Length: 244
Image 1 (cartoon, one colour):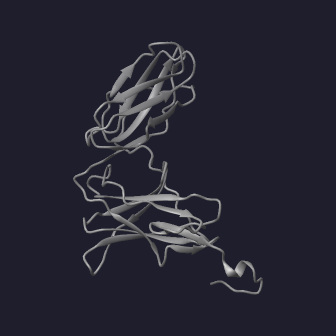
Image 2 (cartoon, one colour):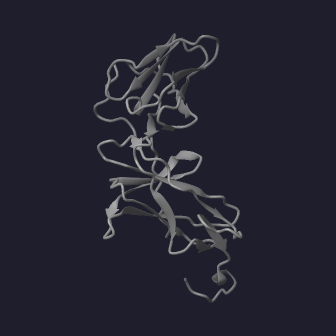
Image 3 (cartoon, helix red, strand yellow):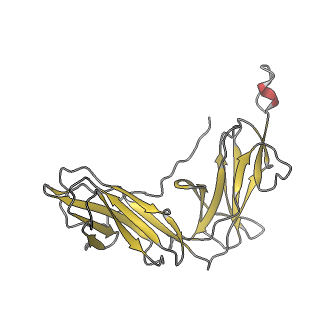
């Protein structure tokens, strides 16, 4: 049985997060970041909070603070508002919540949004396919993320959607490297999987290394390097063939 780890980066509220507002009967707002929740150090990010038409005020809270991080009123009619961070740093990384206020009271809180910052002060990890970059279609693959940096954990992300990720503790190796193995799949024709991995330390979980090289899943090509090349599984032609 294929076991796929699906770990959302938005993990939920911590016990230490306190909000002074009283959640009301309104539905929770939608909350997202553009261009995404993983931002390179010094780059801008826009946080959007979408409530219901008629919302009069929006509040943004950051984990660890009981006071609003920002409060804004819509400048024009609409059901959403944006909060801008012009220079992303470790100070801005963390979990956020959004509320909106309407004539009937405060909304329920949004799902938490976790912002991560990518720093160039770490070296980027490597990503490779085991035991070979050639994988029979329909089979699982194993991706190895490794580094000499000594990271405590590695995160494998599906490129273009950092909300879908796999997280593993780093394991020290005899050669001095630290690595983690990620089973992914099944790999099938027609899919265009793209993966990268990042490393981080437990005491700075929202500060990530630069991304590794990209591994993609595609049909065989003349240049298969850094790719999972899918080939037809012979057992698919022979109904009597057992598992490989």
